[in-house]
Image: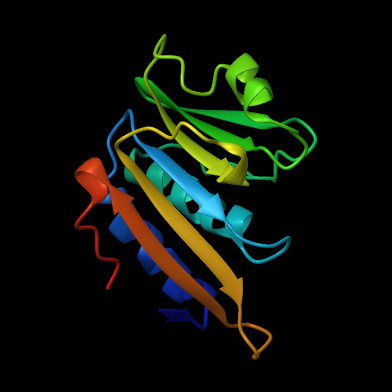
Length: 149
């Protein structure tokens, strides 16, 4: 699928939100600047609006590695694994610990070897036109039949 506008990306985020539950994992793949954080911002802000909460400024957690957003009775954990070197560092972060209920949105997920069974993988790529992106979805477990169209 080709995305030509932020409005189109926002509509895709709403489609994802219609299926997401409080323990899901969304993995984002793509080059620097391709739109991983922009998609994450749409997801988090739409979730906040649906829950009648103030919209947050969603930044890339490249240097912090993780930002946490509280939505009523659960959290959205926004990870950026760009600076991590191996799977062991992912494990040390406790990304997949089951101690609390959270939606996990993970940028630069290539480093994760043992991925959760229920997950949505989103692949973003540049196109020839400056403001166009190719987006592909691969669903696993409950996400297997996800269709963003």
